Amino acid sequence: MNYLICAFSLLLSLCSYANTTEQTLEDYLTVQYHNSIKAYELKLEECQKTEEVITPNDVEHISKDWNVISAALSYHYAKFQDLCTHHELQHFTVLSAKLQALESSDKSVLDKYNQLIMAIPLTYERTKADYFVLPENLRKQFSSIEKLNRPFDLMGTMENFDL
Image (cartoon, rainbow, N blue to C red):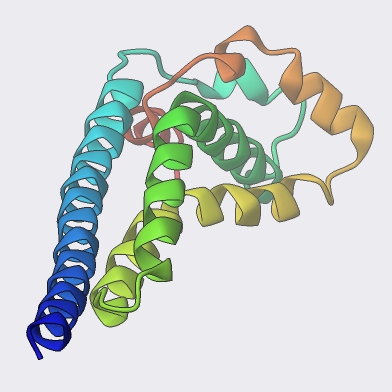
């Protein structure tokens, strides 16, 4: 009888240990996940700190069509943001996937955070779609503008154009 009680007690403690270990893992991943969101946010702010602006003189020799200029500005701005935050976004994505894999994680909360964070890289993908329909010669000309290959202030740039 003592053997049966001892075996039952061992089984309960193993189950309890497994639950505690999974909860500890989930807690650890949750903290790391939230830290990765903060790191991404801080890196994005850092990437956007610039005084550089694009003026009409920088781009109007290529095209005067605002739709063309807008597509180029949006693409180059989003491209730099994506490249600048690439490491932080990868880290966030890995932690998100790990948390999603845990049965006990709150998937609806994770989905909401993921939608917010992923909106930025998805914007880059949308700007690519608009940019790559432009003729190749225009894309090459825009890409040759040094200012477009560095971070620039998008709002300051927009103020330079008569819209």
